[in-house]
Length: 148
Ligand code: CA2
Image (tube, rainbow, N blue to C red):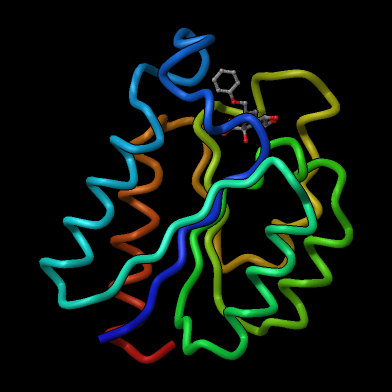
């Protein structure tokens, strides 16, 4: 049994409510519900947190260092493109993570093309909508089973 943490950054609490042409129609509760079911089926434990505040996400990463979290999936929202602080927290946590984006950043504005976190991530999933979280979780299961 592993502890898997799913983090979502600013404005992702609005999923399913606004801009469905970009971000889809699923709510964050829909997504987290599916991820929790997948974890339960594999005998893993899922914890999830969405915050609009950078320090809350950083504090959760600090806690993850000590609570046995084995893998993290994060959609950092716009902090992707701005937050060296979040990168530093991941480097300090030393917990493997996958970065997920609902939209295809490569087809969007220039300021969305750079991620501060991607260089520290195991990998990234972009542009596949809500399914991206599920694909990231499947990759996490495989890595946890292989012990890496
Ligand atoms: O594509 C993604 O998942 C993003 O991380 C979403 C962020 C954006 O800043 C990144 O560049 C790419 C924005 C999240 C905003 O979420 C909303 C959801 C519904 C309605 C309005 C905003």
